[in-house]
Structure formats: structure tokens, C-alpha cells
Length: 149
Image 1: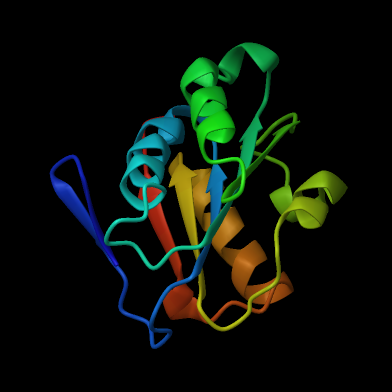
Image 2 (image 1 turned 135 degrees about the vertical axis):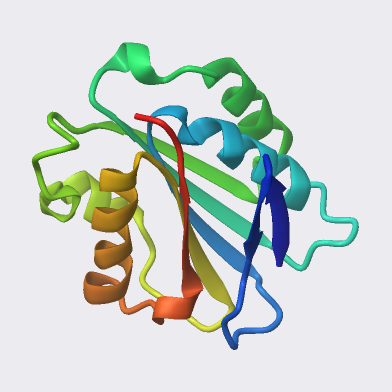
């Protein structure tokens, strides 16, 4: 699985092949690369991805930019895409894993599943730990795209 994200490239180096399921945790400006990925895997022509879950976490309701674009994808791919939105005060200081909604909405690791975290560096590092330590993902199955805060 490879995506171009701006001048960077997200390359999956893990052992699960094919990738059938994707868990996305998105925050802040991370919505931009997340939408790009969704538009790449959801149409399904060359994609092995059968299911995508998105947990979109922000500190305030006003931070859910591009919500109309996400809703359009939700309606178009209702069988393949599940999106949950939640608020988390102090994303910088608080451990995201302590939010019960975050833990409820993310699926534990299973063969053929990867996780991608898109957001500021402090969200990516905390969410990476959440996926590996609490949800059992192999380290290679958790990738991050760091965006400005």
C-alpha cells in the first residue's frame, strides 16, 4: 500500500498482505491527507481494502473542517466507510487512550488491518502507542502522517 501525501510517500512495510481493512485516526489538518487516502482506496478498482473506519478527533466542533467532504464520502461508500467524530479537550497534554470513546471506536488488530494516524506530531505519537500497546497492532502496521498543529 502506498500513497503520495504531498512531497512525502506513505509506504507500508509490514507483513500483512493484502490489506483489507484500515483504521484511520485523524486530528486537525490531518483530515487533508486522510481524505486523499479515502478517495484513493474507497473506489475499489485496484484496491484490496474492503472496510475503512475513521475516528476523527478534535478539541472543538469548529475544528471539523472539510466535514461536508467527509459526509459525501460516507453517503457514497456507506457499505465500506464508517466515520466517528469525537471531541477531546487538550489533545496536547492528555493521553488520547484515556478517552473511552476513542477506545470504543477503534478496532483491535486483526490480520490484514493497518492503522494510519494523520495529525500533529503529539497526536501521532500518542495514537501510535494506543494502536500498538492497547489494540495489539504490530509496529509496522501503524503509520503516521505528521501535519502542522
